[in-house]
Image 1 (cartoon, rainbow, N blue to C red):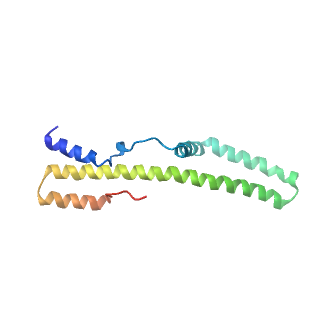
Image 2: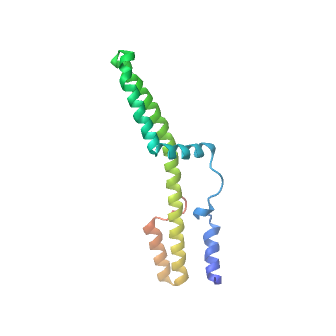
Length: 142
């Protein structure tokens, strides 16, 4: 590795925007949301939903009233949907953030390569165009 390569690598990692630089542990809620996401995306969860509907269907004869019968399934599905949206949004947001961090790292690395290859005005123009083309964000929005 040349001195120039070392400087470019140091400059890239000093910013702390590399995906591997994301440190720390996930919060308890984030870990729970990740596990819930893994569970609901499997066939087992779908099968449980089908079983719920199959158990609910004959329950009409227990309740005798169509209104009560429909209220039960509507309430259960609404609650499950409400909670799953919150959990899945958490994992989706973290996934989007990780993807953006990776894209920023790739764009920064390409911009550094352009600068290393040619230090002239053309390299600066290419670097600026690259940053604009990939939408490299200096600060990732939340």
